[in-house]
Length: 384
Image (cartoon, rainbow, N blue to C red; front, top):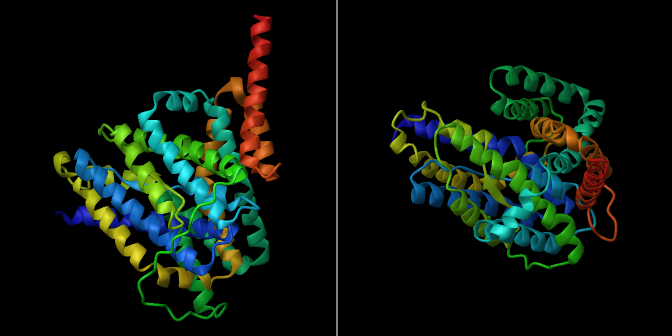
């Protein structure tokens, strides 16, 4: 085992955890999770990533790296009127649909039939409000947030993957060294899993579970497979969907949202600098899994530290973490010229955050975009 494997796995895991943990906490708060459920959520999603990465890497002898769904967490955080039990039901559905996509070709074809521009626009509409709230955080706490933004922009020039992590480190230093918050007494006990029985409420399943499935497929799994191909590895698509969907459905019972193929953090683990021997590079997936087990076990101390931060700092971190995904979503939304107006409609409805009949705005945004796209196609056929 080369030290380069260990260092790559540690960096990838820390980047994945530190850059978006604030968003996961926001998602948990949006569905009313209590402190014990939040701890169980983080533990379960860390262990799910570890299990999926280790199983797939050892099974296929290629480095497979899983991540939690950052856009999915944003989708959950934007939800309103959904209880924790209803959210768990939606998580179970999303995991089951991912697993079924590997086995049922008609389901995969139905997802592929959704225009890329409309699917990306739904994601952009979900992410946009969180990025806009970054300005509110800057106005409320400029002495803390402005240096964080500056460090983020500077570090991003050299290493975009660790830019949010650098902003978090600076924010922690300013807040605790400057006396803006008291350093909490960190707990050093193992986290306890909490079973949450799912409630399959139709509004939550349609408004959260279905969009969570679509967002994960379009913005996480497909880029993750592409990242593996770009580094010369053939991704085990069916196995990856089956395993990630299965462990996500199981971990959902402990509160976790879902895990999927990684893209940015995967790139850290796939390069030649990890090890020049491509036949041995799959072992980095095992090391990565081990790091995530440790992060899950030590998560109570980490969560206690983050809970002491002012809300403006956490809001700024969420905004900075989502700028990259928002850029990709907007690019995907407006690249195909034939779906640009439909994408605009999707973003407008999704970003408004207004649910109808107990179903969240993301679903209505997708539906509005598909309706506009269908009308445009019908008009083109009649003119043709």
